[in-house]
Every structure is written in structure tokens, then in C-alpha cells.
Image 1 (tube, rainbow, N blue to C red):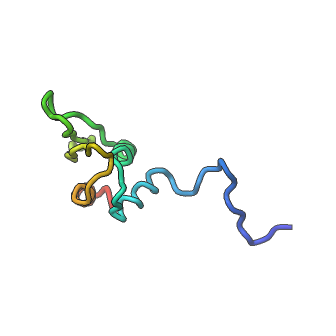
Image 2 (cartoon, rainbow, N blue to C red):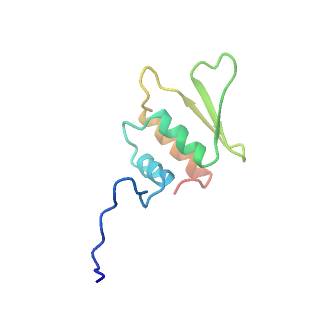
Image 3 (cartoon, helix red, strand yellow):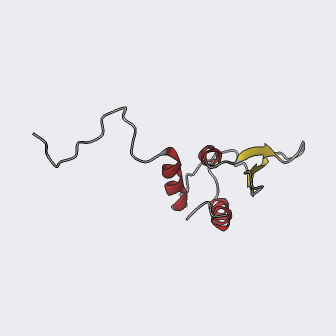
Length: 101
């Protein structure tokens, strides 16, 4: 007999939201604990590649996509969490280029 109740997802089953959607949703909330690693994963998923800005760039990196849209980021240290102003700037760049709604 079929019922209309939905069963909870079993352990190990993929969730309905993709990693991209989860990270975009987190970014949208401008969280205080959004990490550089999460940003790198998200930007890689949407077609950006990270490169260093030169031999003396230190912790400055730039992410570029196929349309040459640059996203400049100062890698946080000693922690891994991005600052609020960085997240807002990243969202602004993504919105300006139609990559974030």
C-alpha cells in the first residue's frame, strides 16, 4: 500500500540540493563562518580557476572564469573564514555578471 507520507532520506543517500546550491544558499546569507575553501569549491563549480597574482602576491589570489571575470580575494590567515566585506564584494561581482540571483 502506498502512502502520501514522505520518508526521511536514508544515511548515505544524496540530498536533493546539489553542493553548488548549498554553497550558494550559504553565501546568500553572508555567514560569518564561510571559509576560503568553501569559496574555492563554489567558484570552481561555476567555472572559475584560481591563480596567484604573481611571485610576490603573498596571500592575494584571483579567480577568473572563461569570460575573464576577475574575483580578487585575500586569503584569510591565520584562520580560514572570509570577512563580511569580502563575501559582500564576491556576491556583488557574481550578481553584476549574472552568476548569482
